[in-house]
Image 1 (cartoon, chains in turn red, purple):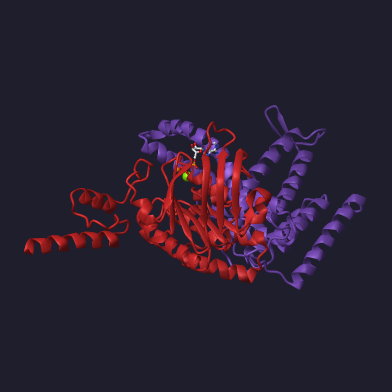
Image 2: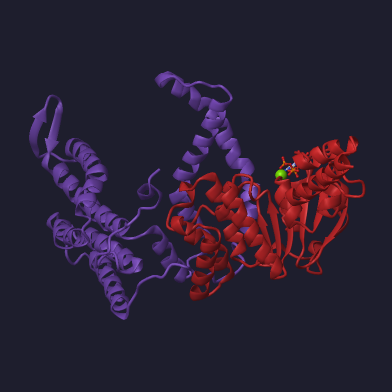
Length: 289
Length: 261
Ligand SMILES: Nc1ncnc2c1ncn2[C@@H]1O[C@H](COP(=O)(O)OP(=O)(O)OP(=O)(O)O)[C@@H](O)[C@H]1O
Ligand SMILES: [Mg+2]
């Protein structure tokens, strides 16, 4: 459970707030997606929810951030270990640098938590399997491709079984198969009741996976709602977010009266196909008359 | 970067490989202490030939063992012979002349003894490195309550070369992508200059993010971390370690009392 109310934050070296008056809630079993252009404050928000900002960065913070009912201002970062998982934007920085194989790297967090060896081995092997990393398990983390490192970073957090997951562009370097595995893992987590905050550029996947979408622009939440509402908003591009191509196509079609009147603009391929299908059927009927 | 460089990787499965790293560490320390305890060049030579060399042969690492000694020990020994042979203070027994330089027997004897001491020291630790995966050693130390921060620093030091080289490759690729064409040796040298900035700065600016990652992964969260890697050990090995430590203590005592001088 994540609750943020009236939260603002300015970096110690920042002249203006990186986040301004942010408010939202994400419940268990929910996946909330965050979108926005470069420098919008997405990574800052990820740091705030995972407790690293302002605990480790310093800077001035105002407002409330609660995770699983606890005010983050009142607890040390070590108190959140295993409860909140953070997958950072740059997987390279997340690798401990002190483990010699992928398998050991994934175990690092569990070792630190003092999990018994047998349980640890089983959990590590499950994660390796789920993320398709079994074949590179004995390689050095530094001998992986960027995408494999990203999967490794995700795995090393997943294995700790946090109840709140924060992922900062976890699929930016992954191919279709890799991101499918990640979204599959996220789906499983959601079924297990995990609260997820996901920063992601792949709108198509978001539209299908998210319960809720936030748009950040200049450190402020400029829109939030269901994927259908938010991703079809015509101001999306102004906010620095590229809309889906079929949403744009449907909007252009609608301007020419070629989109069914009451139908919302599509944010998934299926919805787009249905909408255009309905239009075609309508036109065909009109022709026959 | 090869795996071998990343971690002094021991892929073998000999009797020596399967020993606890602590046993091998104790062995390395004990033979070194024993070698230094006696002032007679035949003694370290005996230790090397009777213990270290057979162990390396038994572990099937003798080729790499000798190669490492050739790389690290031979230069040290050569320097010792030159410096001590010619410039040993208060030596007067000249055995050869090279122009103004006089080679003296006292110096040669001292160099021989010191070089053989170092041979045993290097031999013991190379044997440990060649037959032990770094991860197992770290795990063993962790089980002995060695501070997690110290273990982290040692492990990270073993990995720092691949980390930096990986970062360097990335920066080079990025710079080439921005149109910096690299031709020939001088071009390569020049390409290193802009590499230094991002490399060093990057290493610093990433510190905060790395620290955050380590914290969220629970580094330092418990006093007693567990370890994924199993460390092989046995009652026999534990007793052997105690015996070796007693040996080392005895060697030091004997040396201090000067009984064998
Ligand atoms: N460590 C820092 N110190 C000072 N200012 C920072 C720091 N990190 C980020 N900022 C500033 O805060 C703002 C938000 O940055 P943030 O990294 O959160 O953006 P983002 O939405 O994640 O961007 P991107 O899509 O490029 O990852 C930017 O204006 C940035 O310059
Ligand atoms: Mg970011």
